[in-house]
Length: 192
Image (tube, rainbow, N blue to C red; front, top):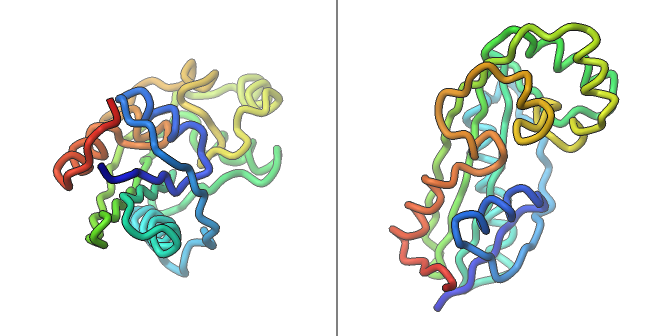
């Protein structure tokens, strides 16, 4: 049985995989530059970063399945990365307030034989109109830290989400149905 390495530092991705009975044998965060390229579209960024992460870890760990992933939040073509501070988080939440935005979950699986498969899943998320008090309270919680778009749909921000169209776990950090289907299709066997 081949081992599975999760090429991610995200505890949410690990929890999501465990939710569907997949426990990676190892977690090896990939150290890659996540800066978007000039004029790079959100979908392309999610795919490129997921692939870079998987390739970086696979190079050091041949003979294993490697799963790399990245989540990109976008309003139109504008990419909302992880907010660097509370001011930036406030700005992001004001931008998301009362609007629909898209979350692109890119993932890349590299097989023990070196086959590379990538996919990007898109989910639309609709925020209610947020009051200044709601935005300030949410930022004060600190839940926005280390989250693309400065919110965690699985946390307190869920009270502000009117609707999601598409994969909910994709917004949390990993499109589970698609990841499971591709891993299974590539011959990965879950550890029972």
